[in-house]
Image 1 (cartoon, helix red, strand yellow):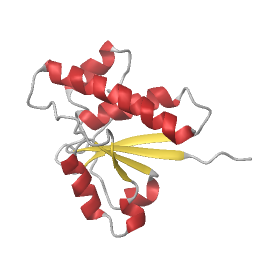
Image 2 (tube, rainbow, N blue to C red):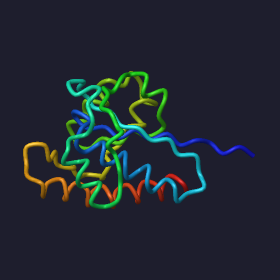
Image 3 (cartoon, rainbow, N blue to C red):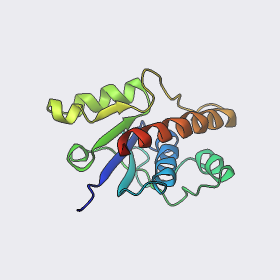
Length: 151
């Protein structure tokens, strides 16, 4: 019997800080499951399209043994609703932006906060400790999501 793929998309504002970290962690932890899990990330704006993750995201991931330097930013498009089963928003603003793009309940039902009831703060304008905080928040959240999705 063929297993169904699970496709997960992580989304933040510019797809250079939070969602690349989430994307990398999803890929890392997905390897622990006997499931076909496809992961990507995107931003609600396209200003950084084609750019690698912020150097601080790359560095914090490297500290924990993950390489995300190959990732490239892209803008979320409406067709992502068709492509992905789960769309994880990093904060309430991203969540509302994604829901406003959805044209029906089926699409909107795919959008979730990565941490229920809590924003993952955007570390872009903060110091390096912000990236450590984001890493820790997402490391826990990603494991929880994958455990729920594969059960």
